[in-house]
View 1 (spheres, protein in one colour):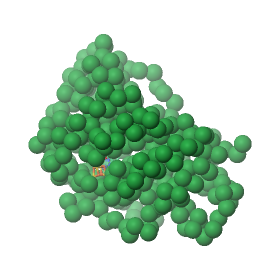
View 2 (view 1 turned 90 degrees about the horizontal axis):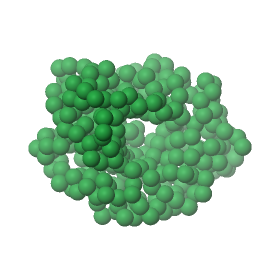
View 3 (view 1 turned 180 degrees about the vertical axis):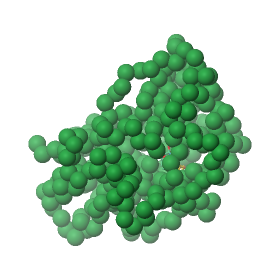
View 4 (view 1 turned 180 degrees about the horizontal axis):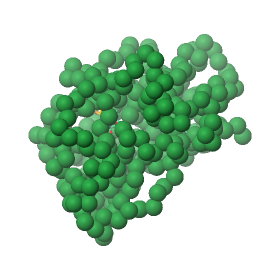
Length: 331
Ligand code: SAM
Ligand code: SF4
């Protein structure tokens, strides 16, 4: 079988697919208050196109897909798309990253489909602060989702973007959640992908600083073995049921065994989060390409995957500085 392998010997087995660029929230670290620039609906990939892209990728060895956005559940009839994707016998797992505000009613559907893991983004456990961060008053809905997911058979991961001067005082509370629940809390380094590109920060909260703080609040922290291609470095507090992870999204120390590519909601292939998008798969499809041509295209494009996020960032030509919103990239 043809596989997706880059010049550094890394095999691609995971695709992140942004199903929309729209979002119901306005997180301050992700987009400006007025929202990110969104494209016309016809510019977005259709479900059929997304199904076809995923199918071809699985024929090239991809085994997992992560649906993201924008907010995936803002896309109308997402459950129908999940049903379509679940038919793909080569696909082992569908994971979803969501802000959780719209999904409580859908959790039992997700359990019946190929969905294995839900990453729930929640940056504060304090309703008022949560509203300030997201610029929307939806903490209760998100918390309901959290409780339903914690009881469901889906694997639950919490995504917490660490924002200097905003939620660093809650690291202890998030770590405490892992004591009684089998879930992973992952602290993410904030990146400048926010639709503006600049944020006032008082202190740098990188991987090292986050880990120092976790060790202060949880002195019995144990380091877990490194997992190949994991986006996080993982730890466990002695006796806890869940784990704690740190995602070095900005310091980029996880690129060596990267197994991922991204497809944005408009169908741009991104070999790396930090590149500008290397090719419009959507336009290629809409010009009438066959599945065999699409396969060859993926093989050729992945061969050019940059060694790491720094090389990818340096290769940018249009917008030298990263500033696009994560909602348009598909985080
Ligand atoms: N709307 C969904 C959500 O929030 O989970 C999915 C899309 S969102 C872009 C995916 C992930 O990217 C979320 O966990 C979010 O917190 C994270 N994210 C967004 N902007 C970020 C930034 N500037 N730096 C680090 N992580 C960011
Ligand atoms: Fe929306 Fe997710 Fe961005 Fe927040 S992080 S604005 S929920 S896309």
